Image 1 (cartoon, helix red, strand yellow):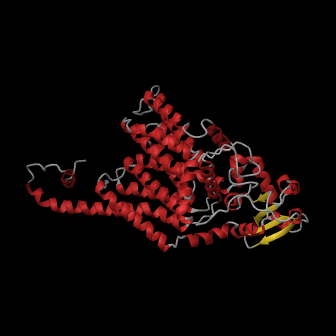
Image 2: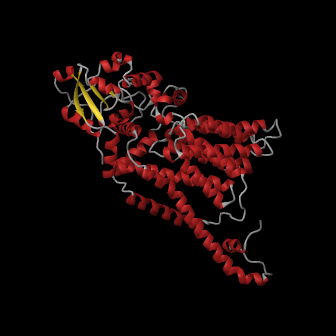
Image 3: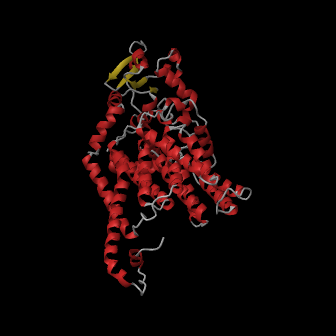
Length: 524
């Protein structure tokens, strides 16, 4: 397709001498081009804002795991060291534990100290905008049609909006999209300059979230493609095996630049081989297809498979990548982003759009898009009343805020027996060892299953060793175990509201109150 007159003018090049009557149409074409650029800039500002606005509508601080992440960051700052054993639970005391997201935790704590609960929302919205921008960059480089690339980006981002929470996995989503963008371009063009950024990416990734393992698997697939391309002519790639081997080795070495070295792979193995927890923790369960976004994920997956099936040649990298992403994403709800990104990239590269509807924005439009996006988000915060007061109200609806206050006022002490979902918050708010929390790899399938059975008041609840030695029990007021403890002569109901109940062992009451351990946390 030839270059238009408007493009030539923007490039600063001279027009052909034999312009003829076309010279009279230059102002009209220029005006049309300017209108298209402004329209595209506005579309991008909306595109980058909408997924983040969806997060603001769901904004709260009820994610229990966020709180043990904050406590971990606080521990790191207090001790000026990275923990290698668990300091937060009675079960894990003295046992190996890797705070593999320590860099994310320090970042989140700084936002929390400066902005309070709003800092958690700022982290989430900032990461969501970054993810959306990177997704659009990936789509735009694979698809010439501006509208098609924008729609794919919007559909992909909105399909995973439910996992846009203040967790470290947002970094994995961002880095995975960046890695795929680099690899797809390098495979297509043969240019390896961008590949030099991958080792840097993996160094950061390995200190922010454990799912850098997914990125290494994608790199392995790209490396395997270059090796197999020498044997089968049907497999095509412009990357050379030698270069890919070197990049893979350097990236693998980059992942070891973390406080735990090779042990971080042991942690990844422990997480990947847990099975029972998949049925107990909602975010680890499979999609239920009770929400529209689950069907959106399925649609993208089937569409990508159809595009690959109709291709004239076997696309090794894309096909194996899609199979891998389906296995990961359909196994666990919180990993649906893997198949969404992969399927969207396959659709962007495999479907032909309108070549005339190309991306016309120049670098000068970037400040406008950035400012427009920032203003939209600011207005979103104001209109949706996202502030610390509102977030504290929402927190109290899901976490035992008042129950913790009563425990502190009365000086009740542990050992503590608590609900799995509240363990992370109690680590932060109560400052005493919890019996269990959301760190599934630390507690293991057996411990998690036993706690689940006890809270469901299954017959073996009476012999639960952690409950037998507990001086303090905090759990949901409607839990079956809570109803049984009301009649248990060993415990006395100390506090109850619509959300939580607190039981104190009578032997602990007879021995007098004891001060709770640790400094009191603050909610800015």
